Image (cartoon, rainbow, N blue to C red; front, top):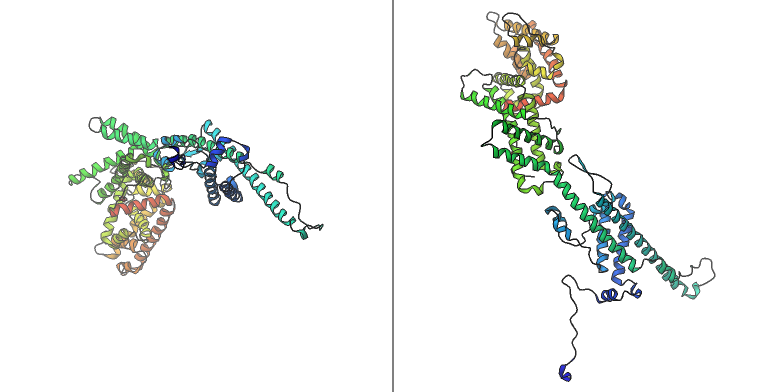
Length: 591
């Protein structure tokens, strides 16, 4: 019965899972009439806010100065206001379903299909002709991406032009309102020349303003152009980053193959794969290790020589009676250097195994991965020392000989041991003096090769002697000395003999005289060593002092001829004498 049906109920409004569409907007979409060309209050406020942020961006230099922090912040504000304006106009978002195929890192930056305008995307579209450099390799965007970048820039400029027009029209309209209010007051409408100008015609204001349809079209065009460029740019960027990570991926694969081959492959096959791995590590070091030299010329032979030294040291420990140069302190010194070479290599391999579980966390710019860089720094420093002191057998034997002499000197002057343990500044004044003293005492001993490496200009090409009873190696070393070094050795012998005679005329003791030399080389001019030779006759003291002054001159040359080589040599000596490895274990894994 219609009479008993009661009042008619309104149908429930249409709803959307995202947001309800205002009825005014629905009518505009249906009617498409020019009568709907005026902006409502919400739209006007959104456009006004966008114009204000756009003006601030121009005051900061516009997109040309976007690299500046202030301009970048202003640009981010403009992009935020563009999104707000598009929401105020109820514009649909351009399709962005392509984001589902992004890598995990970029899905974190673009978690949904919203507009999510980013300054770096806009900046890239501006610098569309700039190459992308990753790990020293040059990458360029595809022609399609460049075309989308140009379209985005055109849409950006078009929107900016419309905003400028809309802002100018708003100013004219404000002037019209002000002028209309003034002319409504009779006493102001006089013929005085200072009277305000007549109001601007409404038709002129409307002609200059950007219409609602134009603003809608510009915002929509910008969003579509942005989505197209974002899709092509990020997709290509993901491909570039994947290619940049390939250096790490190849090294991981090579390490995995090496571990799998250990049980069944021949020694030659293992050596070939390991050589490839070392080559990849060198390449990685050249592009990622910005803290050192980034060397890529440290070859597999350094690793092989270090392993040989370790085997030799182990055999020397097992067979203590065997005649071997690597015994005692010398053996320990060689072991420390060789072990550093191997352990730095194994640390890099361990890193590759760990990072394989989180390869997506590896920054494509490999120099930004702190864990990788730390291991590469350790690897380069250890292998650089290995190339000089482990790979070259004469230098290794010279270093070991010198370490043995220093250990013996510590028994004579115990203070020297404390200097090494504390790395006291005084040590680096004493050390070159001690080295030159040991060299002057035995210029044909293996330690001479170390002085040769630091002062090559003081040695001449050796000419083996045919004198009977002279070992060829000793004759070669002796004839390689320059006249100045030979004079230093002869002066030492004379001073040693003179002190031995003066200290005990009845039974000359070279050991007692040598003790005086060691103590004075360690203590310098301090009073601690004065008692040891206070009772010497003046002539012996003069000879002694002359030699020490000569040694001081040579110690300065040893430090200054090539400071870089000397710094490395002194660091290696401290490491070998103290027996401490350079390694510092990292408590947690870092990419």
